[in-house]
Amino acid sequence: MKRQRRSFTPEFKLEAASLVLDQGYSISEACRALDVGETALRRWVDQLRAERGGETPASKAMTPEQKRIQELEAQVKRLEQEKDILKKASALLMSDEFKRMR
Image (cartoon, rainbow, N blue to C red; front, top):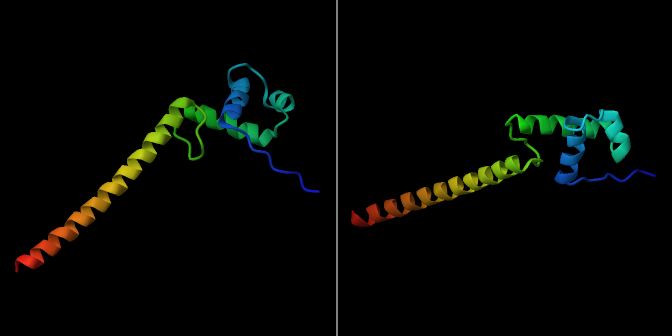
């Protein structure tokens, strides 16, 4: 029978990676204590190091600062798309108005 894939919250990942980076646990010790795979914990530790270094991750952020950055980037992207739509709409309206004036 196939083992079901588990999912972990960003908060759990942050705590698990903090055990290694902040509290001096080895990766294998933390894996045994938390019952998680070594590869997963290594990824979380690497991601937390990168986030603390200022990099915004491609996946869900763990630190509150990076979460906020991801939210703001998504908002900027949405606003830019709305602005582009409005530009196209106004250009279309202006071209229709120009045709009527002729």
